[in-house]
Image (cartoon, rainbow, N blue to C red; front, side, top):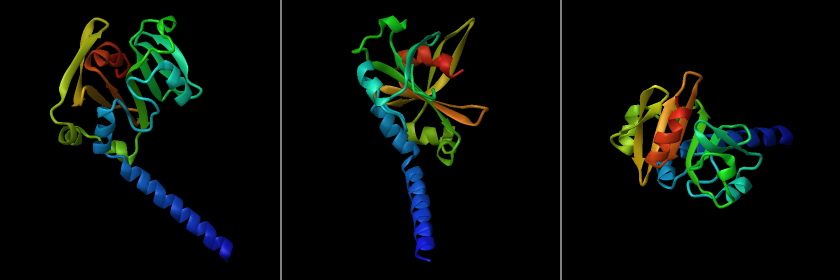
Length: 177
């Protein structure tokens, strides 16, 4: 009986802590992180050096792409962008200039509707950039000296991107298309 009671208590505590953890994530907490150049559930921030990022995001890898040079987490859910053209241009002291994170759809991400984003961040700004032969514009929200972009995708994921306006225009339009 004691063993069964202990298992039930452990399960209750685990479920209770899962609800608490989810409750901590809110549009306001996203704004607080974005102001600091961070996103939920990511290590590192804008301004983190490549050397420090490699220690914080173990198992990641540096990539060259049309989006620019970025360091991706092991499962490629988070990309840390550098303002460099090729991997060979990235040194240990090169700093992260934007972060892109894809989340599975949860009750938290479902709360990030355009209405809630407007209530939390205020009026959105249109960020645009050239994408092949045309221009694409995305809504971005000002968060201190950075901007936050939000995109819901058809595959039940949500992508959040944080960075300076010029970095989002130049690189993250590719990632968010």
